[in-house]
Image (cartoon, rainbow, N blue to C red; front, side, top):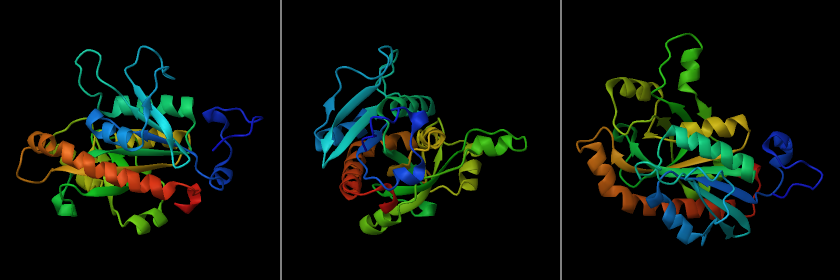
Length: 266
């Protein structure tokens, strides 16, 4: 949405949430961790890479932007690690780019889209795309009263009953940690989180979005079955490209649904 000129354009000065939900959505921020996941969406929405970055020149973050169905789309990919040249995955990059993007772009809605591991015990299969109901961490163990709850960092995703009904997406809880594998301690925490999918970014995005009261939804496509028989890394790499295509289709359907609607209509 375009704010009136007499309202300061900063995240700290957003209008109250009740007012925001009654205005049409006009600006969407997509946070996506890997280039393989991002590029199909860049092509689908015909986005252009921003040659004059809104971010500090020292960071590798990449912004793709454009207009799709009257929506301003900003897709942010954290880019390649400057030392090692691999995708900047994980919670640190995710939280930093989410914070900086909110400050610079003032989105009406955040979509964190990406691939994830799924649990067959919770009904996940390769290629499934889940609409996340809530996010929590599984590797921030602080066994001190109240600090333990802070470590879990449970955050609710924005409720989207109409979107869920219209697109018939599967719904599940997300658990986030900074490791691709799963230790016994992580597994115990993931079970406690009642998670269907696990990733390396979602709860970090949710944490920052909650600070600034920006509605956020999460779409996670399953590349590997964590409680399956194949090694996680092998299965992830084997399915990354095809599952990214399924993610692309799901995100497109979500954006098409959002077009012309207000936040409260989701």
